[in-house]
Amino acid sequence: MAAQKTISPVDGSVYCERVLARPDEINAVLGRAAHAQRAWRTVPVTERAAICSKFCEQFEAKRDALALELTWQMGRPVRYAASEISGLLDRARYMIDIAADALADVGPRPKAGFERFVRREPLGVVFVVAAWNYPYLIAVNSVIPAIIAGNAVVLKHSAQTPLCAERFAECLRAAGLPEGVFQFVHLSHEDTERVVGDPRVAFVAFTGSVEGGRAIQRAAVARFAGTGLELGGCDPAYVRQDADVAHAIENLVDGAFFNSGQSCCGIQRIYVHERVYDEFVSGAVALTEKYVLGVPTDPATTLGPVVRPSAAEQIRKQIASSVSNGARAAIDERRFPASRAGTAYLAPQLLLDVDHGMSVMREEIFGPVAGVMKVSGDDEAVRLMNDSDFGLTAAVWTRDVEAARALGERVQTGTWFMNRCDYLDPALAWVGVKDSGRGCTLSRVGYEHLTRPKSFHLRLV
Image 1 (cartoon, rainbow, N blue to C red):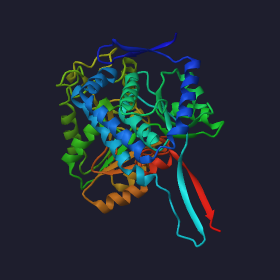
Image 2 (image 1 turned 135 degrees about the vertical axis):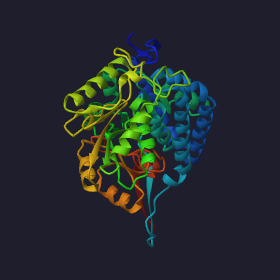
Image 3 (image 1 turned 90 degrees about the vertical axis):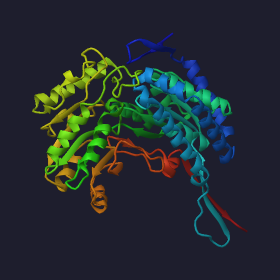
């Protein structure tokens, strides 16, 4: 039987191995989901939400074990791993809290002789394809709201983080979720596309690469299945001349290098006003050099490995491509002795003297790398921020709220930040533009993508 192996970036060992589902097993999973959803949709929203609240309790009780397991699967330093558990709970509980209101019937103005309203009905079976870099946060964005909305969910998690799917199942089962409403499957890429094309699947929530999103869209389009695609970014930030530069340095270095830069909304392009450029670069280099690259199970480590040695090699090539085109590496890799070719351990890097002909300013690198570019003012910053195929988040550092709001109107992005970055607020729609994707998760708006409107027009005789 075909199997997948999870190779830990910590030490290159096989952390776990799972057998891929056979065609008959996949068929059974989809059949159970479709059957279970027909009953689940009739359960009141308050009862669905109560079960999801119990899921949160179960999940929270496993916090420490889940955090350590996460470190071994994808390499995040153990000192930070528990923050993802907290993030999942924050997002899930917010979506639970707003569910009754967000899913309530929508009524227009009263009209004599008629009863009229729009009901939000569940879609059916939602297929969630989740990525490894934030395996719990990415999955929860769709899994819990979809269940609360009355859908059944089938989760296919990354081969790098398969245990995350299993932990969802364990906690939902312990919370009392009826059998079949949530299931997981370990699938090959080919079988994943077949599930997307299955008529029992009503909606696909995918997080991954642009090419992966295109493959999902092709598989879904033949039968008009709905899709939500979060496909990453090459996110920009702008430090204005009136910024608190020390605060910008602290935020942006963290925004570029947290999770070893493996964040779809991590900062990769930094534009700095020429009047504060030297101050910013000096401070950013000094702060970057304080990182401790090492084994992520060591509490002293602040920068762990990237997901696999091949990813590190690709990142090195992208850095070298930018340098060969004139960029200047500000960080001496020798300061990070754990950074070695052939391993997943990679030093952080700030590239100076960059332009938009270089990889660092055009491609999603997905590693601890950022380019820093001097700009003359707002207009140049906006032009360069928009000069990208991506548009997930963008940020500005300034003391002028009105200027920040005006700049945000001009920048092509799904989320616009002022004086912060690399963050997701569950009260706001998580959405991208251009190649960063389509659709929306979280907030009240997220529920609209997991339901369909059904209008009731009743004439009273």
